Length: 198
Picture 1: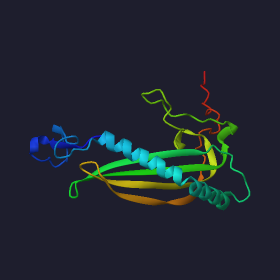
Picture 2: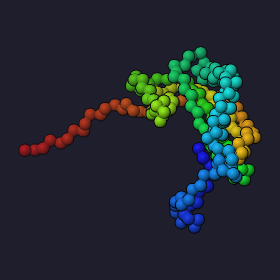
Picture 3: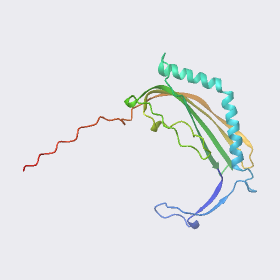
Picture 4: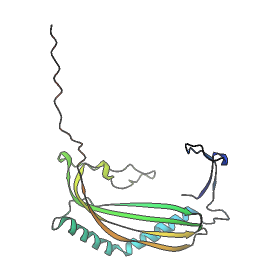
């Protein structure tokens, strides 16, 4: 993550097709005008967010239980329970501040599997050799009723690295129906070809 100034098309603007080529790049974070290094800011933000999630763990679990009751009634979820996290970075030129947003989604559900075959594909490993998390919903063959919660936090950080403002995204529950993808379609008999007359 870095704050970068980019010159495009040599400063001559873009053609009607809005095509651009970066002709000059200059890293700004860690300089005299923008002293804070973004890698350090990110590490601090991650630590702060993890601490907040830990403090809110009881409320999060309570929200998951209520979401499950609303979606499933007395049924028990079949799992798997999954958690994904998205981090957004942006920069406000007017206010000269970094904005870092964290959004966490936890899901569970009552699932069945197409063709009766349970296949859970894991994500590819990261550069460090660790799995980057559970499989995405698009790669699994499961369907059924899914429920979960979403929550998050945002930080506004000054150019010198001061955490000036904290934004809290309240816990929200949801439920949805995951439909079969139709991977296992019935095999059709090959069409009959006309016989050749000898």
